[in-house]
Length: 455
Image (tube, rainbow, N blue to C red; front, side, top):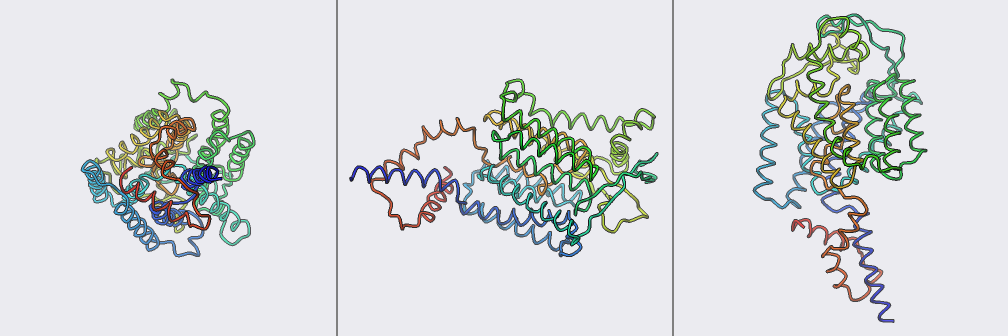
């Protein structure tokens, strides 16, 4: 009987250490997700037509920033183990961002800095799970309110014409109808679904099956049909196929694939820059630019007008997503993400950001997680056309720079087998834990102590 009780005690302790700790949020995680979650929701809603009813102006963004900064600072003070190397790293990052802010006036890069350092030590799957679930709910919520007529469904016509060069701003419209589905612009809706579906693919991983693939394909077709958002639609359909292959085969686990995937974003970044800057007003370039809805010409002329400066500069942009459209100034928006970032934030910060994505992909491949490298490859592809890759309320995957990337199942099991912490825990338990004891406080306390000691 006593032997059975001792075994039951070990089983209870094992459950607490391996199961409950995986379900419950630690204090540092709760602090981070309070600030990051409020920031994400606030910025998400600013891209929807809820801006007609809710106070989502500059004051709400400042409040979201204040909460994000304060919660991350509290988390750092409570949990971080400060070393000279880490202090120098944080200091250098903040100094660069302050210089970029003074040069351009943009604060979103500073927001991203706090999100990245706040994500340090947080499990990557929890970060994506939180943002993906919130994103899915808010997308469905927005579409529902649009379908019932509570918020406006803005409808646009596809822009075309002989010259959308950033100089004359002349725009001619064809008859293609584009629904924004409750968002401020169709491409914002398409990008929102695209990044959220990448989060779903990340969470499903090897459970991604043909039903999920079919949902991705149908979703891509629906966005193309109702919103005429071409690139995101194609990439969503392609993602349904690629992640199905990744789940059912080992094709992307091959060595050659692991070496190439981390290079996708740096290669596209360099290629897009030279491709855009090679633009000429010739029939050949006009045909290519027409397919890309004049993105190349717009990026090229904005580089000529605003320039690419080391720490960035202010870029006046106005698209059809702007509620109060200024007809005097006209349309001016750089959709190509790499080019927009080069103008707004400068080549130093942009190159560091691209390098960070490549580093995340390389680290993921080494840990046996090709799905992360595939996701970053998709982000690299959409950034050739879209501009959301550094906007954390669209793309949370850049937080993986400091997040804790768990290894594959086999690697985790091997690590658990040699874990000295588990052995110490099992040897310390000699009797059953009373059933009425609140394990929650004990588990949180032990995790908090280990985090504070830097283990």
